[in-house]
Image (cartoon, rainbow, N blue to C red; front, side, top):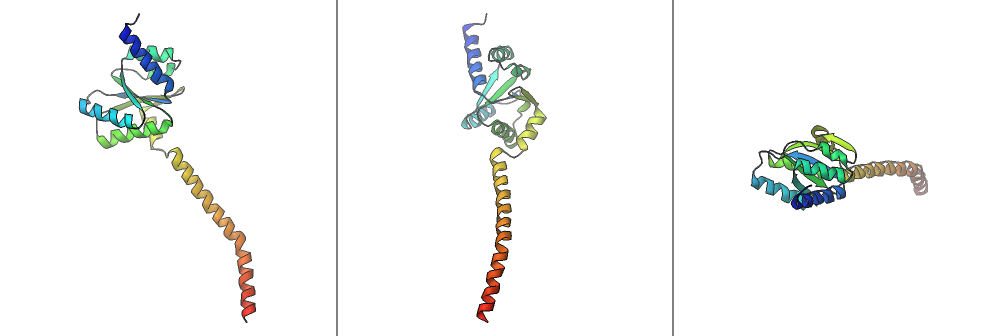
Amino acid sequence: MPTEKKAALIEDLKKCITDCSIAIATDYAGISVSEMSELRTAIRNQGMKFKVVKNTLMKIAADESEWPELQELVDGPTGIVFGYGEEQEAAKLITKYIKDSGIELKLKSSAMGSQILSAKELQQWASLPGKDELIAQLIGQLHGQMAALVYTLNNPITRLARTLNTIATR
């Protein structure tokens, strides 16, 4: 039977797990306290959470919250980024932060629903254009096609008007 403190930690983890859309496991070994504080601030400013977890407690919380796939994320010293909302935003934020800051945080794997992504797959996924970028590209392409259609439909009428104007001015 877990102690009161451990039961409270399990409940806190269950709340984080229940609300999140993606969980990204990291290996925080070798990070200084100031770097960890900086990382937590950057993550918190984006509406996400970073928790250093005890493996056993995380496995219990994952099992009780009916997201058993999260049990695969914890192995060794583990910090988990809990992302809320758009999954790719969390992946982009953490990979960009690691790249820009130069800290020694290592990505392990991540879970989205029942899908587990390795660190390499997560980095590849984070490098893809986001939802907003893809929508903008689609709108740009549709706009170009519509403009071409309008020009094509308008061209015979414009030529007729110019021809009639030339005949009328002679």
